[in-house]
Image (cartoon, rainbow, N blue to C red; front, side, top):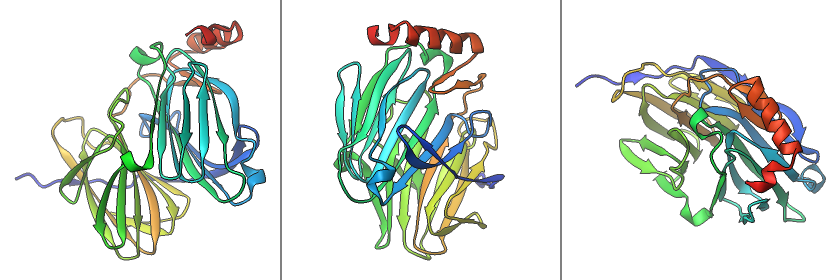
Amino acid sequence: MTQAHIREVRLVMQSQPTSDGDGVKIQRVAGFNNKHFSPFLMMDELKADDKKDYVGGFPPHPHRGIETLTYMMNGHFQHKDHMGNVGELRSGGAQWMAAGQGVIHSEMPIMEEGQLHGFQIWINQPARDKMKPAKYFDFQPETITEEYLSDGSLLRVLAGALEVNRKALQGPLMDTGVPATVADWKTQANESISLNIPSQHNAMIYVYKGKINVNGKSLKQSDFAIMPASSLENNTMDTIQLEASSDAGLLIFVGQPIDEPVVHYGPFVMNSMDEINQAINDYQAGKFHQY
């Protein structure tokens, strides 16, 4: 039997403080022009103890050419869009939107007090999907795939498929434009897990709490580790070994790269500047409301 290749950390980035929407404080990691980030584009961590840091939420705004996956660990948000979708994102749940040719949506907190902690992940759409009709689904907490790996270790798979400790797991979201996996591992100190992932897929880890080791590489809170695809061959697998140095929490990202140009302008991600200009013109002309 061929021994699995050990996936190495090639780059460590740190999330950066910024704000978005109506002044919502976030920590952001962006990789629009990094081929090893693909198919993911950006990750925002929303974390606040004071309602003034999140109460403004994200009022109505447009998107084209991307998918968004929003995951709330603490706090409630309400999604509304021009297609008539309304969804309440509760603690532990997730929601997914494929913007395609265009969507106008809002995400507003529906809580008055308490901690807000969650993530919004941007996933690129391949060119073939960027002008398809928009789609939206929400996934309540009880629908998220959960696997207790030990008394102090819980893995939640939100999207895609993941092999953990030789067991295949699948999240409720399998409709992304290219295969993309997002999982959340909460663990106590000294716990460890082993992941097997396709060799041709990029992989990333974001530590939102504590300290961990990734195949021997030490990572701390706010570190975002990139592990590029190791091979273009199908049906080959790589191994990632994760060990917690303290009580920890981290997000796992695995996905098939999209080998296409990425042109990003605000809420639009297309393949050329001409397509960006068309998106701006279509939005200003009110065409997004017609989709």
